[in-house]
Image (cartoon, rainbow, N blue to C red; front, side):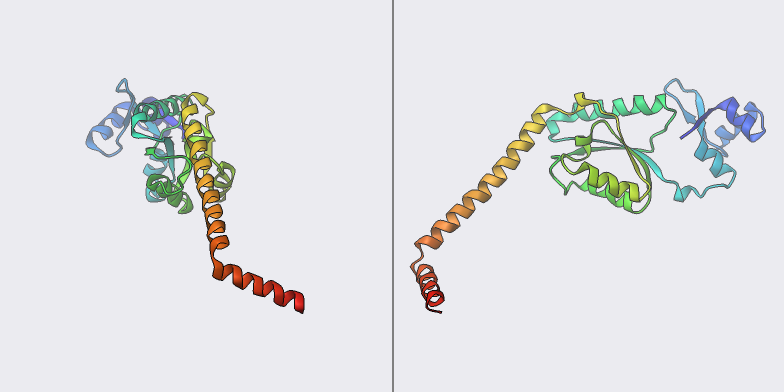
Length: 213
């Protein structure tokens, strides 16, 4: 999203800087403010003022950050700060910063699902993440294709420092545990069948019948 300094916006609108400052005070055309308290304006503000775009239909630019546990809250801030520095250097303004807590294996994260719903409603233009696994641990390419179908771009900044190795170990351990439980369940079920005389008797009768035929 392109941004304009106050004199650039005034020139584009064909008015003086003092008039634009007065409009900011009166609320006719509110300015954004930098950390140094300098006024700036966006392309969307210009389009809205000129009646070129309905602001309600404007698609958002979003930063998405995720950690696995509440003990990693500092990492959430680090991810958002990293994204902010990147987009500011590109002259891009974030409309929303989403901070999520939950495993990358969990497809039921409420905030993540709300983001996907917004994507499918064509409300999101761009999603910034510091690393692929911050968005989803596995299946990123599939979700990226889904987003592309709704004209949403996922920008991955590839900052591996925001992807803790411990999280990967925990997720892999979780996967192994799930499959181990399933394998144990299958073995246990097999033993139950083998010890069930009624089932064995039925299988024997079925085998004898098949052979006689």
